[in-house]
Amino acid sequence: MLTLSGVGKRYPTGDRALTDIELTLPKGQVMALIGPSGAGKSTLIRCVNRLVEPTQGSIRLEDIELTKLSGQKLRHARRSMGMIFQEYALVDRLTVMENVLSGQLGYVGFWRSFLRRYPQEAVVEAFRLLERVGLPHALDKRADALSGGQRQRVGIARALLQSPKLLLVDEPTASLDPKTSRQIMRLIRELCAERDLAAIINIHDVALAKQFADRIVGLRAGEIVFDGQPSELTSEILTTIYGEEDWDTTPEPMEEDEEEQPAVVRSTSHEVMPALATGGAR
Ligand SMILES: Nc1ncnc2c1ncn2[C@@H]1O[C@H](COP(=O)(O)OP(=O)(O)OP(=O)(O)O)[C@@H](O)[C@H]1O
Image (cartoon, rainbow, N blue to C red; front, top):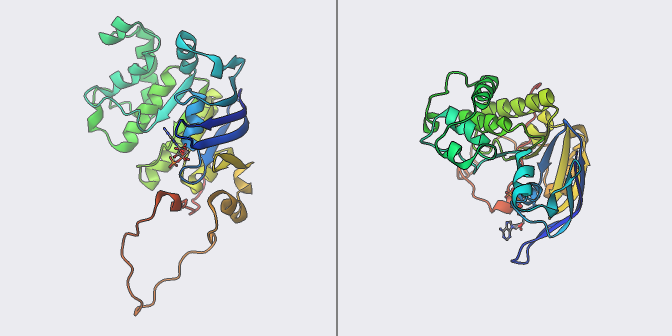
């Protein structure tokens, strides 16, 4: 369905973000993309929808070579990719319903969308989607009155309204509490199964990736260093992806007379390690 071959990206600054990426994603597969900060996860996702221009290689979505598209054809191809990006924030002053319908912007003409007059069938589908993502009672709420989890649900409904073939999801749980994070990951997974939709999810939380993805791809310094089943993600492989760390032990409780550590320990972004607690069933 989606095939990346020999994909590379070097930014004008000289940073090489991706090297020789080979990846094939079949229909219906939920793939989690993990790796340390700066490994190239966001760059990879953005190369697929061409928010970032790959400097090498080919990216095919079904029979369309995405790297060669421009203008109208690129806009058309982008409609088949639902994007759930943190920074694709909702428009706060608009209602939930209006935010979802804005997923139709690529379809309806400029004046129609400017005047916010959407086709009846889009409105009906938006109702249905809002019900499906668990927000049937929030249609008229302003987006700024929603919780983080509710906002993410609106973002998911908006992405689905354009009937995509592929979902590109960038850190969907970054600002959510653990329970809401699980609910959002479960929802994405269920929706992919219902619609035979493939998804690439850039996620820092390894435990969530293991629980909710069919496949995990580990990036390190722009290269794929692991591609396999969640059950194959051993401590050795985590070390390959993230670098040396004792993945299996948790710290011993401190002795009473031990000097207390500061509550917050700041680290550079390159030292960010994944959460490893394994939760219960899906
Ligand atoms: N616009 C840009 N211009 C120059 N270099 C960039 C740009 N965006 C990213 N990079 C560089 O490309 C590399 C990969 O960055 P990217 O954001 O894709 O990593 P990431 O794995 O998504 O990181 P994080 O988990 O922190 O979001 C890094 O070295 C980064 O500094």
